[in-house]
Length: 222
Image (cartoon, rainbow, N blue to C red):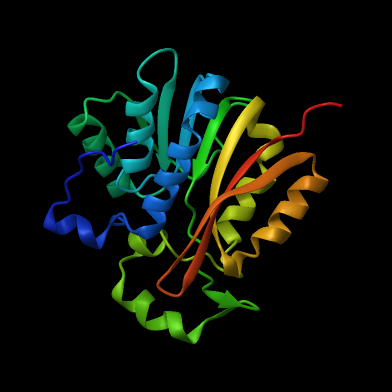
């Protein structure tokens, strides 16, 4: 999977997350899983928070048109416009929707779900972490939402995990990026108790962070 063409205008850097190491780790993970994804033949492929749009666009290019439909959903309208621009630069058709997470999707609608969430811990016991205050002051509101993850960095991710039973179609695949501070092993144990199979398919240490990509799907009946 090649990194798609994308173009930031000067004003975009203040309001849209610029692809970084976590983005490229997720691309590598999806490339390693591409044959598995093709075998699953997903009809509805959704990325939450696509930002620049490089992940969902790379996937659309790799899977081709076929019967798959690609959707990016982002609470940030600037990211929606950027994702649409990236898809058009790469001649990929997809829908981009300005909305919060997955609440507007019908039950069982998603066959392939991808999420690089805001995973940075920005509060402890409800208090803002001191080391984050300057960053909040520098970032505009829209950009803060791309990285600020609240308590344990899991505030937004937990909302998606709580919705998995409803949103995932039978046989669906979910690829989730987490950092070490999100306690991925505990996340996996919690999902296993809810009858999901979980495995770490790739991890990488970068600039003081240890990142993981989890593959999650419903347990098959015995």
